[in-house]
Amino acid sequence: TLDGGAESGLLTNGLLSVGGNFAQLATNDPASFAASGAHVTRFSGSAAQTISLASAAAAFGSVDVAKTTGTVTIGSSSTDTLRVGGYLKAGSAALAGPGIVELTGAAQTMRGAVPTVIVLGSYSADSAVSVTGDLHVRGTAGNLDLGGHRVSVSGAFGTDSTSNGTLTMTAAADTLDVTGATTFGGGNTTGRLTAGRIPRRADFTQPSDWRTDCRRLGT
Image 1 (cartoon, rainbow, N blue to C red):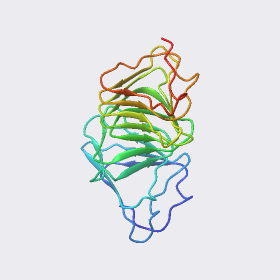
Image 2 (image 1 turned 90 degrees about the vertical axis):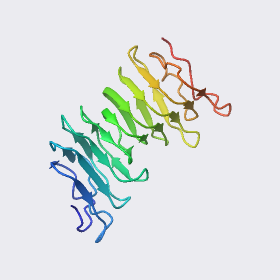
Image 3 (image 1 turned 45 degrees about the horizontal axis):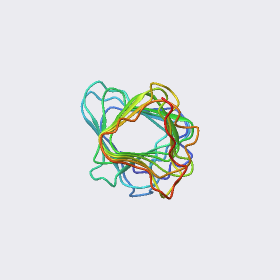
């Protein structure tokens, strides 16, 4: 349990290994856990674990789920957000909702099973990714590069019309497999969608107002 003073600028490196539940409270300061930079939080318990975050100021550097059994459950509602500024390694054990994951870093990687994800920074898949909720790419810096891997989404995928988020698929092995609706309403993807495949399983939408946000894949 973390419920002390402001940690902003104090958790910038090193490893925090968590074997039990993780709880951030905000009795004394909303930034009682505010990791950044090269700091890594590793969830390594042998049983199921939970993450409880009391404040929107709570933040993680990189997150590594180094478990072979049991899930790591984020929050108690869909408004609870695990904010990650570094890499995200979900491993063979899943991160689970009802909370969501928000990725804010630059030139970072992601992998594994995760709940609903909002990509606000630039991320590349460095292994297969399985999203059990929705996948959104938003913001002027938001870009998801499939990196030669398969990204499966149980819900919907979208580059949102309120931002310039983009998708990059330039390798033949790139696959975006979306069970729900797929919407391209974000930034210009000219030169970003040159290979790979997006199987059509539900509605595919590219709003007419965004004429250059979606370009046909090459292969």
